[in-house]
Length: 154
Length: 154
Image (tube, rainbow over all chains, first blue to last red; front, side):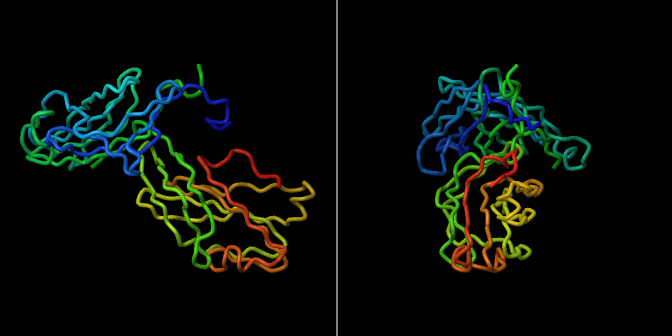
């Protein structure tokens, strides 16, 4: 039996590529649908919703990340369009490079859909929402269908 | 418990219809519609594209029917995987079915085409998908979300 062969019910996933990227304000992110349609579709518990693209529409609120660490953040959206960010466990970048630690994606919060994620390699203290993305850090953006299961090993 | 109610993580599927059809150039295919696809939870995007090169498969014998699975990896590299060809007469008689090819690792299925060769052999990746089929030959197209669980019986 394949896991989607039974009648599909429920389900929480992002149905479009969200195009997560840095916003016009460099400390904030945005959604930027690459199709040009201007919105992203997502499902929560079987219901489908849309969120319209807008600059700076992903406020980056999370605890401070220490210098010389790497951390994954998951961007989540609730049915009403409220977007939040969940911080993962930060790992000393040297340990990641040495292969002694891995990076795990944090789970989305309850009743939200994961839209994407960002990986921040901080060379200086990184304060989400305050520190510019790309200044004293390297930010890489990912779009999600769901939260990936596999950790990052490098 | 419904089958999608547990925390969805990972996942590989195509999130839109690619509009697969014959390409303009000989032996190529096209994606007439842009679409998003996901591999292991990460979402990617494929633009409309004509003249997509098809993998050169082993030649299909005359009088047979065969499924070809089109898939992509994260960087957009397209692969065509040939299934097991069976005699069209056996398919029509209900003696055999068409099994789906095995999806290559770390790939997302996009669509399929099915070739019913006529009175001459057909070489996918070399022969033109309609121009080189003889009068008794047929090609069928379909877009996929995932590889269907059931074999084709016609």
